[in-house]
Image (cartoon, rainbow, N blue to C red):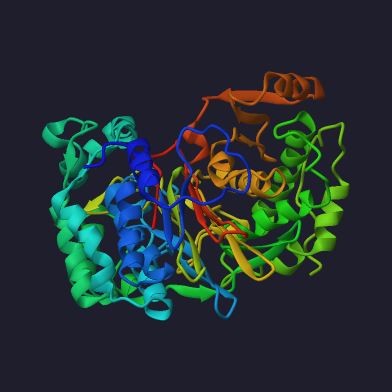
Length: 548
């Protein structure tokens, strides 16, 4: 068994083919992995291996992404799985077209919460979308059968995998809540104690559920045996989801949001998630020449922080389920609007209070991301989640399926107000960069509210500073939001920058050197000269890259 992402990445790097890098590599914790044909970057080596199996057996990027997404739900049970949801962006290199698969969870028909939505437990669960979304993507754009792409996940769930220190730590942190649910405790609290790093975690009930889906398709989950078990668990525990809610759920194909940053086309996840805000922030930054700045210079951090605040303010004011509210996407993504927002930013002063712009004219760390590119240059960026770590802290008895707690992500008013069948917004923003019609990068990260800020920094690191993908991922991160007083940053940000920002009036909160607060990004770029696939995985989580 693979004992750590770093060991796995080193072994992989030793066997993949070498190719010229776009610039000298900076020293990084994890090695940058290079391959010539296909590549998968995910939060766990076994999930990346599952995707690679599909590529090496003739599958395309969608086959690999779906296999890796099912597998990551097994080996990162705290972050995603069959009881969760997500969003996928696909770019097809042949026709040069892009699409997005929205498999966000949705509110059930019954939304009566007189005391507010609980943070966990059965009533916090929204209708899961993972099985529907991954099945739809495979059916429309993959080449393999559902049984084929599920095979690695089934194998891992049945045979078990070695628990990493990261997962063991998350179990400890959530011990009390996990212990309240017998079915969840049976999986990660053997003998009543948190499972330890190095132990083998098996989930035979989940393996059985995956086998049922492999044999009967998504209908088993939404209308068949698994749906029956889920509805029964909801009734027993006071949850809101019924068999009718499950049967009525559909994944939705949507157009990605699009923008430009320094000549690169940005394709990202559409509302009700954060891609539009990411594009808006990047297009604000496009009005500033950042390439003359040193990475993490005081001016760079200030300008990016000011742009982030504006993007977050507009996100809160405008983003919701587009099937329920009128989201002003065209205005948010217009170059004129970006120019107007950029004009508000002063190079030498903090904006005291950032509010939403005039757009009327026209939250949880338990998330995971993965990126895939195949031999044809097709790309997938995928982010999926349970909302918080271990979601609702509820397992459907007899299924091994951990359920989300997405209902708490609704608001009480505005574009994100709760409604039956509505999809709550979150900030996930899986994205693809294209240059002159050729795919360049696929990127994604978990990290709750830090997703949009981290994605901004990843794109800027790649485009403005020419960093390699691993260097871009490992570079120190910072986060600013319109509703929060502190500028939060990792301790590796230069002391001179922190001092200058404090003198400017910033309240700086320093976190760990590689802090899990900032998520765990994965990404792959294609070298434009050699065509090599170059992948990076985040040491803040158990990331691993595999290619051939």
